[in-house]
Length: 383
Ligand SMILES: Cc1cc2nc3c(=O)[nH]c(=O)nc-3n(C[C@H](O)[C@H](O)[C@H](O)COP(=O)(O)OP(=O)(O)OC[C@H]3O[C@@H](n4cnc5c(N)ncnc54)[C@H](O)[C@@H]3O)c2cc1C
Image (cartoon, rainbow, N blue to C red):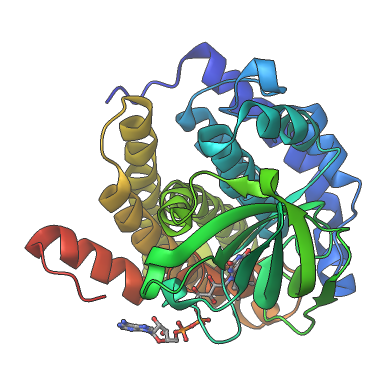
């Protein structure tokens, strides 16, 4: 893999960097305290093409490779993980899945609006009773004439109250486990679908996380995405690529922690000189720096594998596992460098730690990533 980014990717990265510094960083504390990112950010992300990366131009996308997607995601993660999550879910989990499995009509109906930021998508897999064991989900879709009627509920859905469409996974027959699951594209204004915002999150406070309840939600046959009964494998292939974008967001968190900690260490004086002089402080900084580099290289490898059409799922689990744990370590080390000031939300590192903490939980917990890696090593599945 050539680690030279080249002119085009460097320009994309700079565009994202400037956007973050201008449109996100000045508002981060306010959005975090208000538990509400400015909704206008979605159109701005769309206008720059950040919601259309890797999607073909004929569907409103702006093409680009997965390394460019990682660079943008990393920058957004450096700025605010709540904003990064909007892109990772709407583009990474929803638009890319429509592009991969949708009919021509589904692509033409949804992708131009999703990539422009005129519409937003959410991904409805987790339920109150099924998280890691997603294949046991109980939301049910039953045929009724030419329609499907869906009943059930979904938990912790990112973009949930903002989204215009939910990529919803529901059981369509009684085959055991994941075998009877199908995927649907359900407009969120369909009668019978209600949404409740989940408040009180430790981090990602600006993000619209919701519980969705579906009571006799009726959608036409054309809402089915991909073949009936193949929903679970569609969800797993979406999440495998999704793990790369979570990992890239974690690199952004760790980089933000490093930038903040180095800056503070050079400014803060104790015992008559800056704390940067003290080797125990330098140890904290160097631990963060190594985590940043290692997480970034693991993440870029996934992008390279995808762009070359190689198997990438295990590499994505390794990157997500390492980068998410590294982001927590990096933010925690940075907080230590800040001393007591790190504990106050006027300084950035406390939020980085709170935001990082969920990264080891969603899109497959660290334990689930280890089981995926273990399965690849041994050929024996723990699931
Ligand atoms: C802020 C936020 C946003 C989210 N966004 C979305 C979204 O947009 N869409 C969506 O569908 N979901 C979303 N999720 C849900 C997320 O993916 C789940 O929380 C996650 O998969 C874990 O499921 P759970 O919370 O039910 O934990 P559980 O599955 O109950 O796990 C609890 C603990 O048991 C461990 N465990 C479980 N099974 C095993 C096993 N076999 N071996 C070893 N350990 C095991 C886990 O690692 C964990 O430590 C979000 C969650 C959060 C918190």
